[in-house]
Length: 404
Image (cartoon, rainbow, N blue to C red; front, top):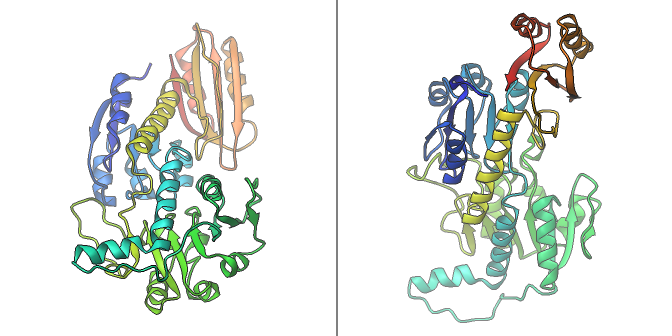
């Protein structure tokens, strides 16, 4: 069982209360905060914390990790993990879990709703009507049926959007750097340029890798059709905002929806500024693609249950940075968890120590990735405490824990 030194949880950025309930039901002490923290603030707050929960605003840097004296697990209560130094986490034996599927439907519904609103000019007409201007016209208002939807990034969100949009009559084209299973009648484009040239609507759904910075800039806007509708619900740094603004003002982009920005407030009390403000037929939203009650509840439960499973059973299934081990339940045994640098001979050293202490192995599981090895050993209840010290002292050991 976990001792009291590993019972503190810190949840930032207004994570759904179901996360707190799950931890509290397992006797963890939970502290919650509505906003993110700066690096220095987090370095102070993370002292004594074993589980940290964040969303997209809080950055987990080497400095933060070095300040974390008790940290065992980080939960990214969102899809992306580019705000976390994953290698440094691995090097320090800290497991990271995220929620790659839990808010997919919410993002897809927002994107599709915005596509219809932009093609019909609904947002702009509503804005004008609020100011008293009655502009009833069919000019430059279209149905989505028959239009070509270009999806950049055909992952969980892009592929689901593909299915939904095709069902209402759109023609689907997509581009992805990886081979993907094509759903329905979607057609894969060989290059990004090919997609941009053919699409009536371009929507971005790529991940947060650094190579995607300014993926869409002036060169890419030049390739698009006159009057293209453009959406970005992926990452703020993916689109050159100045270039987008220029093309909206020129009419090359007839409407845009942006949910993510290069610089975003850390909390609801901080003022937001963007060049995209007050432009016609432009929908800007405060990073709410996954902000539905259903999605936030699903994310809270998924990530928290994964972390609880790791803390009490050592399971790492669907971890972002650890080798994935789905482990059986154990009875009448202790579970030893050994995290080490991925170098040869560690397993042999562990087993030699166990053998020299006449320790019976009930079950053993090993998996490695590029950086670390993860060994789970279930042993009978009889053991010498000095044996634990010997295993901890094996060269290359990053972290050792004894469960049960």
